[in-house]
Amino acid sequence: MSVRRIAIVGAGHAGGRVAQHLIELDSRCQVLLIGDEPYAPYERPALSKAVLAGEQAWGELMLAADEFWTAHDRLVRMTARVVGLDSDQRCLRLDDGRQVEFDELVVATGGVARSLKVPGGDLPGLHVLRGIGDCEKLAGALESGSRLLVIGAGVIGMEVAATASGLGVAVTVLDVSDQVMRRCLPAAVSQWLAAQHQHAGVVLKSQVGVQSIVHDGAVYQVQVQGLEGRCEVLEAEQVLLAIGIDCDTGFLEQTGITCVNGVVVDAFCRSPDASWCYAVGDVANCDNAFYGRPLRQETWRNAENQALAVAQQIVGAAQPYSEIPWMWTDQFGHNIQVVGLIDEADGHVWRGDLAQGKATMVLLKECRVVAAVMVNQGKERKALEALIRGRRQIDEALLSDVSVSLKAVAA
Ligand SMILES: Cc1cc2nc3c(=O)[nH]c(=O)nc-3n(C[C@H](O)[C@H](O)[C@H](O)COP(=O)(O)OP(=O)(O)OC[C@H]3O[C@@H](n4cnc5c(N)ncnc54)[C@H](O)[C@@H]3O)c2cc1C
Image (tube, rainbow, N blue to C red; front, side):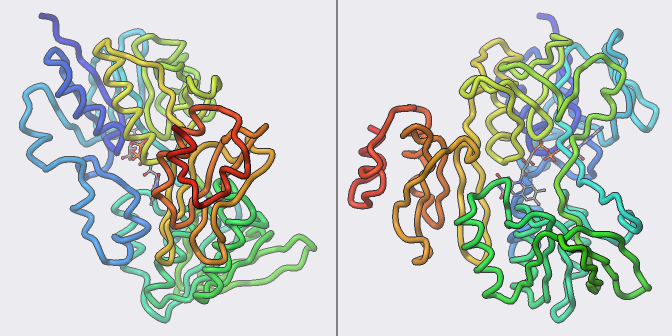
């Protein structure tokens, strides 16, 4: 029985899950899991929510008990950063000088918090939030009565704003966009969410760009400019940069493996340039079989399910990957979930009244459900996913009738 050496680069959520599945699925796999964080693989969503709020310990985020990572002869976990790949020799170079040979490679490196390219945008005390270390540093700095400036009104920025506000911190969020969470939410839900923040005292500044950041030893001064050119200086003890991530693909440069918006992979998560190379999680720009086009997803469920798809592909039991995007966020006690692709829609209907704090916006294209946003209505998710997958034309009146269950409509 020949042993297959599978190297997984990145020991986060997706990389850790691939390792777990391979150990379970195939006794011929020798798994080398290489990650640059000093922690065993863990899930990240609570880092901007319960862990940051001090309501949950980060130890509870681990994918498996510590023993799992040492209990298997066929699994080796290495703490190091991969800095190079020799694709002819199939050999990885680690930052501590070690070299690791493999038969198949899984790239699971996720992304790094994007830096702000303005004077002072790289000051050492600025916060980002990707991992446990970042979360501990930010949590330690959020004192009640202090001021936090969040740059970027995306999911992480808005979640941190809500959590910090709950801790008694005076929060200001600024963004170049005119809408909070613009990439994820339609305007109506974005406006409703913005109102929840404002009601809690969070100051939202839209359509402003950061010009520079300076620190006088105690306070940051952030110079911002609005659309009409008016400049303003905002002050805060802490600043969080939350302007998105860049895929962490540096070690693949000059290897012939195409990286455009992540590692380009086919519907089986395999690089068209190297049949031994897969990508998974945030870093995978995958040809999604349901949409018939490339899609890169930065979500918990994608990390979870694509990891299983890749492990199955490696052991020879593959299905094309066809996950419909699903994400959630929790802010001020409200749960918002989004399924599908909101940009595809040309119309929508409401189920329920958002003013009552509980409603679903069903987004349609040519009378077919393409996406939905559930505000405190997560129980409708499965039926909505079935409707998206079904691609049937559906009567709008039926969809908006809350006396008719979506499960019945989808059946
Ligand atoms: C604060 C926060 C809150 C979130 N909340 C939600 C949510 O509410 N809902 C939701 O759906 N999703 C959420 N997400 C997104 C979700 O956590 C990610 O989609 C998921 O973690 C992606 O998994 P991944 O394995 O691809 O990347 P990661 O979990 O980021 O793991 C990548 C790992 O690779 C390591 N690495 C990178 N380069 C190298 C290298 N060269 N050598 C060695 N190691 C390397 C990194 O250090 C990291 O440990 C959140 C993310 C964050 C950060």
